[in-house]
Length: 314
Image (cartoon, rainbow, N blue to C red; front, side, top):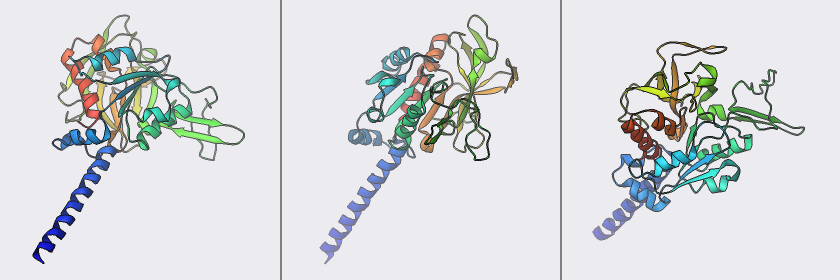
């Protein structure tokens, strides 16, 4: 009888271990648990799920330089990522997105509702990690509504280019990509605020209060930012009704700034995250621009590494 009890306990213990492992896989996949928080778990997880591949999706215009970003990520003196692919937006489908653990979208200003929806599904259904850069997706498709709708049926007000609507004789399609990012796109800095002709400093980039977020951990709390007017960055504001939007890095301009038609707040988001498990990260300023225009190689490498390893939970 004692031997049977021992065997029974052993089977039960084995079952509990299997359930814990399954739960860990789900929590890691969803982003709730970071594999780097558990010793050796990243190795186990990637053995089963596959080693991470990175995809950079680009279009024909907008902020960012995909080839330069790939060079920085694959450079062994910086990050040393083994597998980085660069693909034009027109060649991307929901199916081939699933091959990648991390997708970066930049230099892709014009994007349709269907293409934006594809990236939402990649995160919410496929469990992928998404980095959205600058003004990507801020130019509407040709068949979409461009003007704000102010009617009594609660249809969308299109005062944010990431808020989309398409109407035909048979359907009215709404996509709240702004809520997905937790942000409103206002414009690009040098188009809204007078910029110098050469490299200049619009202010200081400052980490969130603790400085411990996985995307900026180890970064100096305050660094002077220099930009080139030919390598601009996006002005965005945080949506007040999105509870899981988190500002990780911001630009302190020192004071309110007067734009062409409006006044801008003193602090502008540079890096923000959103979504369950922070699987979505937004970078207003492309990191390849930062590395090119700022003489801070250590900060450049740190931000690149934290972007790659941080988004993958390592």
